[in-house]
Image 1 (cartoon, one colour):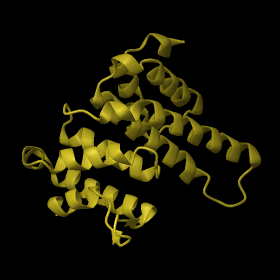
Image 2 (cartoon, one colour; image 1 turned 30 degrees about the vertical axis):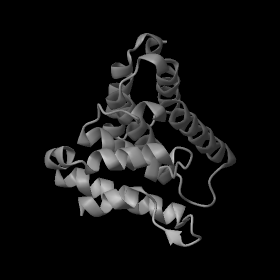
Image 3 (cartoon, helix red, strand yellow; image 1 turned 90 degrees about the vertical axis):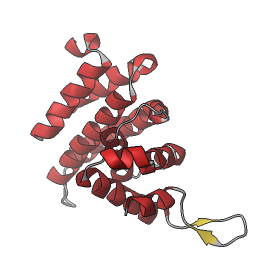
Image 4 (cartoon, one colour; image 1 turned 180 degrees about the horizontal axis):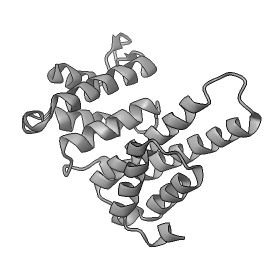
Length: 184
């Protein structure tokens, strides 16, 4: 019940701590995700980015620990429930990332989470994050790690998404790929 009193910053910081420690506790991460979704009116882009990144890292760790094809049914069900919570987290919070109050780490962490999760419903958010990072002032403040993570994210999304059809019927690159060219 302690999570029910946490602020959005505290929720994202706790989730980040679990992710950095590589400690997966289904109950805790689900409660943190639920709390963050309950705070949708009073959340910052930075906290949302940190939460999406942390949850995606923790889900990836849970997936990796059960990557064999013969996993017990209850483990498969558990992972499916965690993925469903991740989907709901993205669906209810990604709109907050349509902000100008982002720093390079916020952009790349959210881009990585969306790409790692292959989250397709808010590609306009991914495009916005990529375009924000491609601004000259953001690139100047970006570390090599941020840029490489952003490039990986664009590559992963383009692989997952494939080429889109342009208005003329010709294949065209997704909008975020123009930003990726600027990073390189």
